[in-house]
Length: 389
Image 1 (tube, one colour):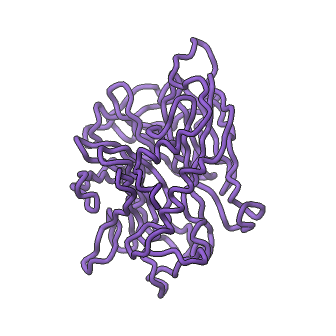
Image 2 (tube, rainbow, N blue to C red):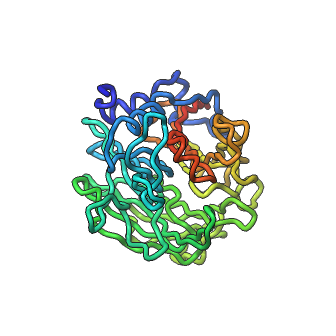
Image 3 (tube, rainbow, N blue to C red):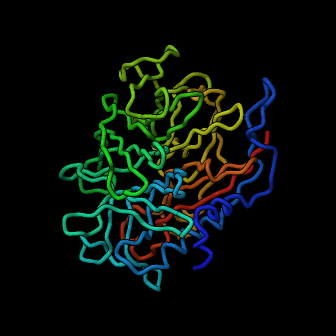
């Protein structure tokens, strides 16, 4: 237990245990190709930190697993942003009780935080009228909920997080539809309740906030539009400064920036056609290059994590290349379960040292009982990806 009281600084140090290669922040020579991946390995210390935290407490308000796994560094510590979250207790046999809606004792919420401070990690949720755990951002209406997108620091000690509103369209686990975007702003001392909830542009069938990247006086907002043949198309907006409530301008097919969301264009891949990505992703600057981390979109439930590169935030991007295949997924994976899949890859630049990317991805099952019987399935996994010019 003591090792996890060292706080978010120890968590960042755990992410940095890697052989040091040439810094990705070093200037590349003009005409040089993108950085090369020279090694990938699990970040066992980060995996262990979240696993130990999930299993150490006996409280109805305690995080035992979540997905999305975005992160933001704040003055108080590392804020981990989750979507669907199991709370409560992990039993000695590694299982959890069914969720309260199914007659069990496990609370389940659609979004939460884990704040990793100098005093250790703590779970942050909202509260319903009876004082029971609830989503941090709620109020999406009957049969609706909010799932987290990316976040950024906001003001002196706050954080701003984009959330996407979804609704149920049928009885199956994938019978759902996106309905809009909002911005939730939080202050450091009251993370369990938004200071404000502001509607964001939502007229172009784009779930904005898949990633937020601050560069050159702008905040770039990446959004995903579901593609008919699978995966998502990537779009881009930007805001002058850092306040996402300011006017947005959208990257167009002509290479200009328009104030009209309807003018936003799909970002291009190699050769010009629209690039297809996963719904959640990252776009992070490394020296002269931007690294697009995505899941392979060519096949449903692919376990492949891919990197593509661009000289600019808006592409065109190189052909995505697989850098890692999640070993947990599929009938031949860790769990020997065809229903287990990997998804939602993200980079965590605030945890990185030179010469590496720190990456997370999530694991889940199409059969809900699987993550009840084996609580460890439903947790983020972390990787260290070593790169060189």
